[in-house]
Length: 199
Image (cartoon, rainbow, N blue to C red; front, side, top):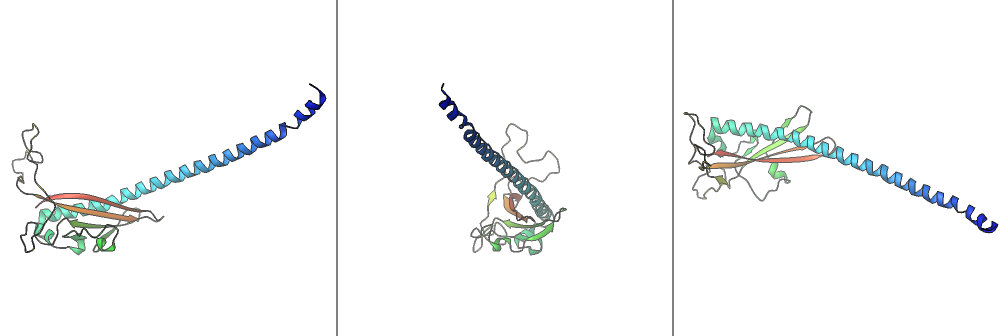
């Protein structure tokens, strides 16, 4: 090697090192932003999960009212009960995001101070008895009792108690319970459940 080529080689190390440092700097910034995005996404998912669990309180309260009313005075379920968030019909033209869907909703507060609204819709075309022949005839979403035994000594859903009520021939009416919660940080969650009660 001659002296001229050695002089040229000495000047290459600094630009190469500068390029490597710039690449390392960009990679570090990207890694930092990536970890911040992952942390933010995980936090948001945990927040939405907590709101969803809180909204379930509304479904639970509505289900308790529906069950106790069906046991004590089933005729009340044939008409709207605005004070309890109950609507005796279900208008399929109203989406869950429309304000009309939530007319008459009951508001409760959970232990964390979140406001939860819930409403119960009976899945029938009109108020009145589910089996009304009209005019017009009421049509409801009904489920027949399951009489299959699946190798058991009793049918599914039956009780072994000697004083149990036998509902084998009574159809079950469907009710949709919807609960919504608006969190303090702008998160919104709507949960729904379908409950069936013997007609």
